[in-house]
Image (cartoon, rainbow, N blue to C red):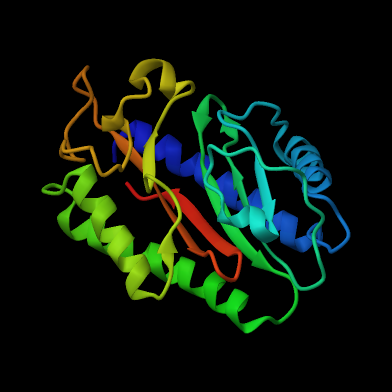
Length: 225
């Protein structure tokens, strides 16, 4: 296995441990603001791994804020008793980036529970598609597959892209913000192509499903390479 990919997978295992600890310690509770939960997760990551560095802004979104993509900066909401929320954190472990996102449901609302289940199932379906065609698909083709898959599940896709490159921190200084670095409808470069220095590229795949009428969204992301 490529050494860089191994390090990225090790970072993701630690990110998964952090998210499991969030559940085990029952940090996600109604009456708590998104900002409060965000701070508690930051403190927990420091306790478990000594992490203070994140390669992108830490996201906790609940209620109608779950409709919004990463680029937005909505007002702070308070978690409700029958709510949906998602977390999107990019911790850096020993200079290797992770990017991990999960959806949670408070209560028993059937639409929200279905959304949580669907966003996970859709990610796995997308991963299988990528695994089968990874050497022949472009970023545009993978994005279009993901958008059409969202509609097949009965939702809309909630972002202008469905993933991005990841690597040794800070990967963005090396790769920049070019469309070719995203699983984007305008990226017609093969996802399997190496970077400008001849190194393999590794991808985070993200699924963001939304229902604008119900005002809910779900999110799931992790390494797909």
